[in-house]
Image (cartoon, rainbow, N blue to C red; front, side, top):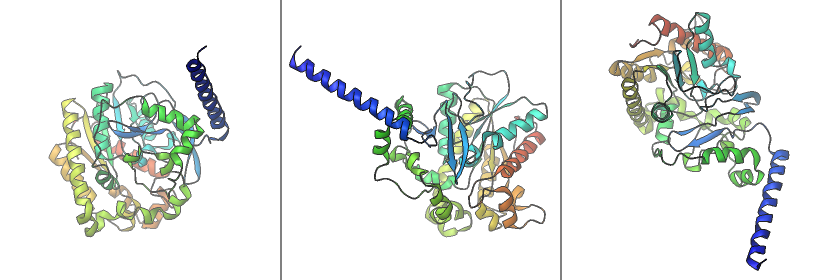
Amino acid sequence: MGRRRRRALYVAFLIGLVVTLDGIAGALFIPPATQSFRIPHAYYHHGLAPGIEAVTTWGGQSYPMVTDSLGFRDRTPRHVGLRTARPRTVLFGDSAIEGLGLPYDETVAARIEHHLHANGDDREILNAAAVSCSPLVYYLKARFLIEEVELEFDEMIVFIDVSDIQDEVTYEGFVPDLAGDSLWPRAQGFLDLHSLLWRLTRLSGDRKPVSNEFHFKRDADINVWMENTRAYVERGAALERGRWHWTIDPALQKEWANHGLALAKAHMTALAKLARAHGIALTVVVYPSPVQIYSNDRDSLQSRFWRAFAAEQDVRFIDLFPSFLERAGAQPADVYARYFIPRDTHWNGAGHELVASAVVAAQTRRGGAASGRD
């Protein structure tokens, strides 16, 4: 055996040994509750890895995270057929609609489906939401599902969060790359779950207090983004002030929110055009954050802007600001305590039920997925 061959075998042995030891270390030391099911995507920026069964945490509370074959949060890691004989609705939204902090059956998606089935409507609800999505991601993901995956559905409901407008500005430099959509995101997810060396390399020197910023230029590293949930609970309001206050702060509107609204409108206009081209009904839903509730922001810029958009595009519009702000005799603190996770911007189970029942009622009044607007 030649010297070069012996050297190659020796190097291969060392690499194999390192990989084996790294895998053993990963099995021993990587905690099962991780956020590594969150992955970057070359075309629609970021989402959830498919076929995940994990236990994760938010705000100090553990809850199950399960995704189906499409990478949608779901009840079981089932295979979702691309073709369907049933009517099918896809929900788009951010962490509120994903259901951060709650088991799947307590989320808007599961509750909408439950109400429909209880009324004899067998419509299937798919939840394409993920944390920190915005109109750019809604449009790109819908286009990817329709034109590349060829998923059949006849309705989409897009929930536009107040925080989406800041995300639009944050993501302005993102360029979708369909050709670059490879197995790399899945490989990253696998390494996050099984390789201690990979995780140490990714996390070293990059720990920071949690915020809702999403740095796509750092490959959407959610492992860092959600590393310290206590910091989010204790400091979140200060870290994220602009995300929620722009509807009531003219200075923030001038600084970046008007630009974010313009970007959001352009992306939602593209989404409306895509929906019309494929015969898919589109509904736009808005709702307040705790800031709008405490500020009694009844005639909110968020509502006025998207109501005008829906009228312009001849799509449905559901305004949930009154559902929260006009609770009979309720004070803002009482509304917050009833419908939100304590010291958080996300709904608790009652909040998800409020949203789901209001959406189903509005859709039922207008005859399901037929075209039209409020």
